[in-house]
Structure formats: C-alpha cells, structure tokens
Length: 115
Length: 110
Image (cartoon, rainbow over all chains, first blue to last red; front, top):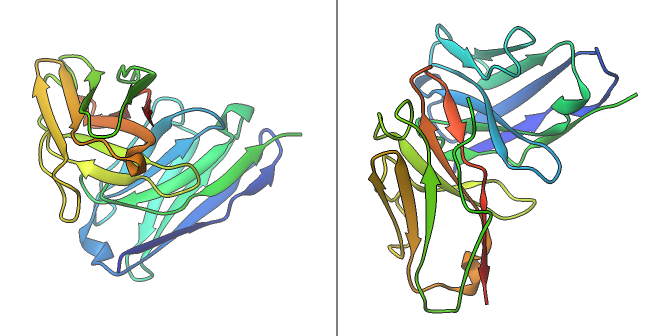
C-alpha cells in the first residue's frame, strides 16, 4: 500500500524558516517524480514545486521561487521542502504527492505563519 | 501561472449526470494531454480520478469520464451518488514545465 506521510509543519513567525518532510513507502520512490501542493484555509489547491526521480530537475511556482527549495533523499525514501523567508500568505496545509500525474497524496501538514 | 477556471459549484439529483468545465490557455490545457482531475473530501487526501484527459486509474468508477476540446477540459459524473459530494479540481502541465490547478468546484448532490 502506498503511503505518504508529511511532517514538520507548525507555527513560525514571518521571515522564519521551516523544513517539511514526506516519508514514502509502498512504491519505488526513487523512480517517481514528487510534488508539493498547498491549500490555504478556505482556498483551493495550489501547486508549489516538483522534483524528478534523481533530483536533477526541479521547478517552482512563481510565488515561492527563490524562497523554497525542494529536494529528496532516495536512500531514505524521503522528500523535503525547505521554506525560507516565510510570509503570512504561505499559511496552508502542505501535501506531498507522487508521480506524473499526482496519483498518490499524503494527508498534509499544517504550516501557520504568524507573529 | 493563473489558476485554471472552474465553476464554483455544480449540483444534481441522485442518478443525474453533471459536467464540470475547466478552462485554461493554449499554454496549458490547449497544448498538452496531461490534464488530470482530483476529488477532495475535506480533511482527507485528494484522490486522482482522471489523468491524461480521459484515463481512469484502476479502482475509479466508470461513472467518471473526462474529455478535452481546445483550451477547455471537462469532467462528467454520471449516475450521481451521495458519495460524489466533494470538491473537484482539474490540473494541467504547463509550457513553463510547472503544473497548475483549477479554482475548484463544489459538487452537491441534492
């Protein structure tokens, strides 16, 4: 059974940093593209970033480019999202998702940016 | 990277068919076959319902079907059931090698 479990969310002040993790199991993690998608309170899904299977290709939404960095450790079956210079508008539930298309999703982790 | 445009809400009675539209541009839906649809119940993980415009993943009911014409994709749910009540999102690959989601549609079963 495919499982994606996000962690690392929490409360952070504006300008602060946070690193999210996504532990994957039940599929060949090292063969799949991976994504981060977020959903602000009361809003829709918004794609954030993606990374290819070996980590050599990444892309980002304009709203996070230069502030967020996606990475992966295939030996640990784990996806990461390093979030710097956080803003109030980054407050959201962050989901990791696997594959092209995004065929499996985690339950999400809540990030709250507030003073 | 503007969101794809979906109607805010669509409703239907049990057994009826409904269609959700998803309008993009020539740089996303109009250019690629990589259009997918997701069902999202509050508090749960989103679920892939359709990919590559019209392909259903294993385990998804054949009551769900997808299509595309020009810059607009559509999801049709036939034989509407109470369990189909959820938020639905379309998504497409873009010419910037990114991905974009739709604004989301709330489906209500009357």
